[in-house]
Image 1 (cartoon, rainbow, N blue to C red):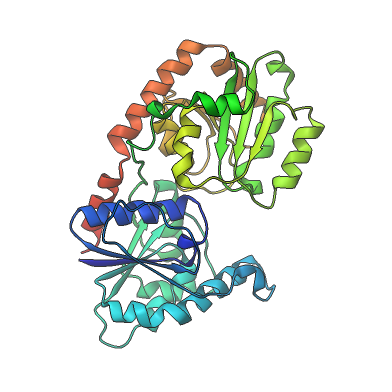
Image 2 (cartoon, helix red, strand yellow):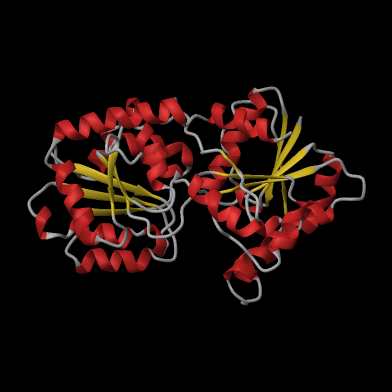
Length: 370
């Protein structure tokens, strides 16, 4: 089949959705399909290993420059301005399927000429619903969600239950074998340090503020716990100020967003993954990458997190959202029991290896593109 991924952000920013597009493009190519990726003018190009994957970029108006009628309007505007420039190329591609990632792109089927064979699929990971999307969803031929949690959200909105396909992890790129002592040394960590880590957009619903408050808990006083925060976003200044006010300035490292290719060494060089999200998250790529790297994780028992880490307590600990005390209690358990960390880390790696690989994701996607 000829398959295209169309998402303005995929060539201009890093994130879980963007990672999924590139990984699926690789996997589908390796299964013998012709794959194209259409994104906005930008410089992000992951290593495709010499694969014949067509990557095309087009101008667009960034959301920050759109009329200020709300964030969702701005994101729709960004995608519409991109579509105006990319439309001719997508039509000329004569694809069997075009995969989009947000309801903001539901207008695409209306741009195709009469008689076009191209069908459209949504591969959802969230709830970026907009006015009129129920009507436009009639032009979407296949719906996919990356967790059952997100699947029920899609069903509630559009009246159709999507096919559930979890995201995957590249087990060669993410694993304990990539531990890099030089990274820890570069942070000035003492030999007995336990490094917690988070990677993602610094937005309020990611819950990083709760993680900071947990680290400042008296229950953890005297334990060699440190926290690396990898990412950037609108909450960065507030989080830095909070860390300072909590007396954590020497134990929290705010690191800028890293290209996806640099993350394996960071995950593998940490000791605990810390994910305190308080908003809808269908499937956390970062959490899955931490698990694949052999890290036990602490996560909120919310949205799709239990589906990723499991709720049986073998790969990590689930806690109530918006509860810094519960996070501190979980951190105390893992910080004071090295055998528990080791056992959970090994189980975490095995969980990802057995259930969450990109080849499996691609096979299930193809089965749904009928």
